[in-house]
View 1 (cartoon, rainbow, N blue to C red):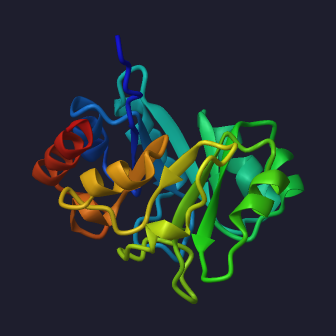
View 2 (cartoon, rainbow, N blue to C red):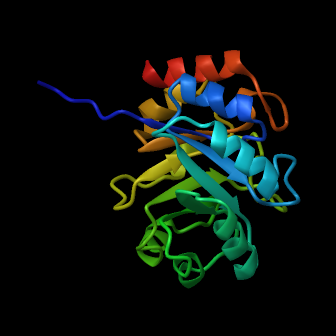
Amino acid sequence: MQFTPRTRVKICGITRPQDALVAAQFGADAIGLVFYPKSPRNVNIEQAQVIMQALPAFVTTVGLFVNSKTSFVENTLAELPLDLLQFHGDESPEYCQQFAKPYIKALRMSPNIDIATLVQNYTHAKALLLDTYVKGLAGGTGKVFDWQQVPANLSKPIILAGGLTPDNVNQAISTLQPYAVDVSGGVESSKGIKNAEKIAAFMQAVQN
């Protein structure tokens, strides 16, 4: 009997409890909460608490940080029982490990990036998230990078991000067979406001 591994899905940039519930209802494995004031999808502690309280069981909550002060991450963790941390800036392996929480490290796919070396550096990361490189932006670009940049047979699970939509995610999965895909703008009506029909279409495309 042949077994095809299931591609996990994280829906990032959740700002409202109703959007978190929709994501869970359509089968998302994780939701992302952005703690980065420069992002249009930024949430504060109070907003995040309401969102997390609305979630059913078995949905992983991921807190996204970008070059944050250690104290900011620690204070956030003191208030919120986040399951997983996502570091989306220039954080070192030592920085990422200091919080005694499982983490994923985002890498922006600049033309000269050496993914194989970075995999060896971030040995404690649970996965590496590959996102589009746009100068001056930490993420959420809505743009797709060249999937051919990703080496085969990396020793870390890969989460594919960057411009994914219901229209291209099936092709992305067929091309790279990532452990998971990460979507934000591709399932939105406007920045930070998710669209239930787009979430449903995205999840259906992943399952197909």
